[in-house]
Image 1 (cartoon, rainbow, N blue to C red):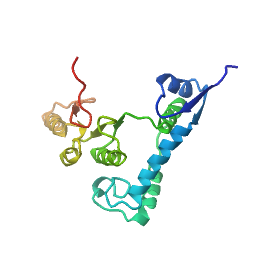
Image 2 (cartoon, helix red, strand yellow; image 1 turned 90 degrees about the vertical axis):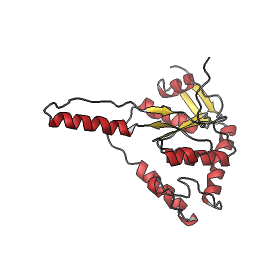
Image 3 (cartoon, rainbow, N blue to C red; image 1 turned 30 degrees about the vertical axis):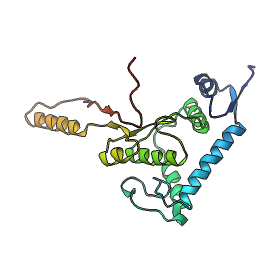
Image 4 (cartoon, one colour; image 1 turned 60 degrees about the vertical axis):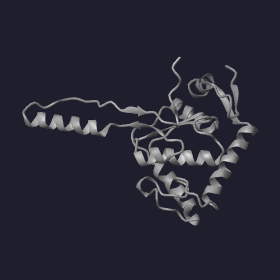
Length: 211
């Protein structure tokens, strides 16, 4: 029987090989080091301060989500907010992920090292940006940040302005209208039609220098 490898998460030195050994080979025991636990406690304390005792709005901690971003959550309800968030995200559909994907996701989630964050919306990215600033982390010097939607009030209101994915909805609408008119004229289109999104580069994740 092959000897199992022991991997201690520090938040500084997790490698692709480590992830492979844990996720695919399932041949490593993983534990949190004292350094990693210290970083996690510091992050927890930051969130606790935002939820209890801070008047500054932190997205998803003491504000609503999505279109309710401008709604403040009373301090006594911030715990309930997080509980409902967890419950809503715990509802899954479709086939379960393979074990190796789950192991990789759990490992990356547990390791506190990170130098870039991609968010599912500009609103979430704005909240992440505010929280990183409270934690003393610089964007993009310490952590690069990318949002999604390219919603002008959010991306321009962030400090620094957010790099974001633009879904090019005008192009989507134009293409859809063209296909509709063609179908009415007796020339329907079939199959998938892809409209290319674009990356709008701003200060939170500037483009790398050209060599």
